[in-house]
Image 1 (cartoon, one colour):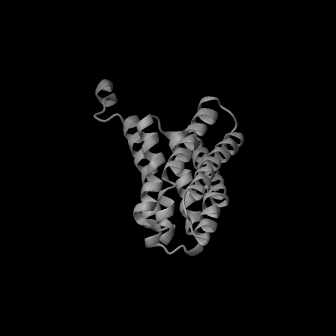
Image 2 (spheres, rainbow, N blue to C red):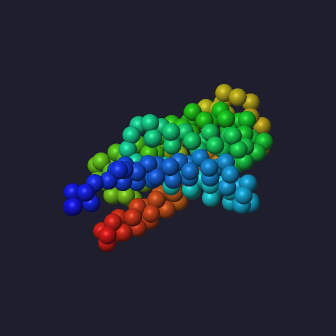
Image 3 (cartoon, rainbow, N blue to C red):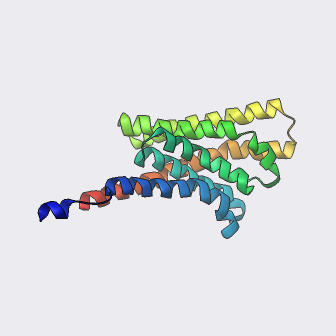
Length: 193
């Protein structure tokens, strides 16, 4: 009888991993494309969407494993943003040229959290600081290269300068705080169970 009760058709650990990955992918893909269409966020749109996306990227590092999942979730937000054309409106054409830098920045962000915090057990705040700085540096370097390689209208240049610099710094930091709170809450619940 005990043997029968211990059998299961679906490995729930694997199922949990699949569900977590799907939820993270939703945060990384659907939020940038559809959130602003459903809820008018005004001038805070990029801050809110960026924070959710960065939280999703960090949760990828903390809660999933596998190269394909990491690459998929690192690339989803920028593809979603471009498809939706929401965050940058008329500047979407110029932001498309930023995609390789954004992908690389997102992948480095995930990889650094995974390496520093998950693998090397370095404190979360220090891991976050390093990951945020590297991500912002990669994306801002991509912006600098784009501006020097193309003719970009001054207004677009100023807006993207803020979006790819200070705003990235704010949203990556905010996403780090939210991801930490979620991970801490989840660990606490696991210990209580």
